[in-house]
Length: 263
Image (cartoon, rainbow, N blue to C red; front, side, top):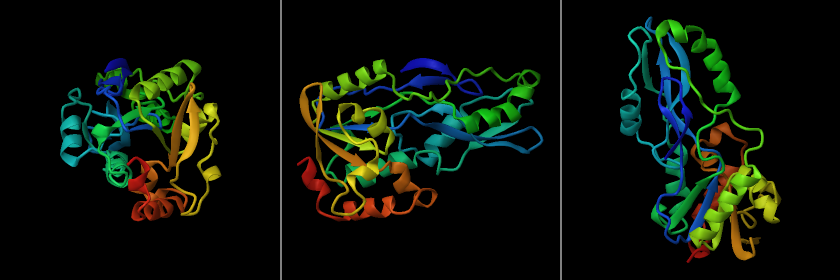
């Protein structure tokens, strides 16, 4: 993985890429990469930040386990008076990856080995919420506590520039996949729309008859099928998102349709 920055507490920000580049049955395009999150407690035991990104996920759309998160966080050494890190809520560490496996790939009759995974932005990006937390708690004490400076890229306003879109296109064609699965609206807006797709998931319908069906799409002269689905986060944590999509996806999973799509 290519190093593109430094997280708070010193771990490298790494760019992800599909490692197994053999032909795949589907190409799965997701939102910008996530990270491993921890809670930071000061030396006085007070929680300073409830969820701060501290390491790149070991793999794309990572199905993190409690033990794996604990080991990653435990391997980060803090200076003597800087307090301690503990794993953040498991709702932040791996739920999308687990949902991808169980509620997206498995209903399609696929495993990760049969899918080419890709993220719009291939590395973790600092959100405005994270920036504010670091400005409040980390930056003022960084020098005094001997904490490392971070060079964590901010989330860009333009998620995908023409160069990145060309990279995704090349990966899609190299994958040999006949089905492009988009997870959530961002892959539609920032990639598929440039080839004639709709920019919003709701444009493909919000009924069981309309959701989760194939639509023709041509990319660089190659005819493919587009399968627009919700993001796994909305399935893993439905209470945090507008009602309807998780139920719609559950109905799709429970139908006989998914297994016939790539068969």
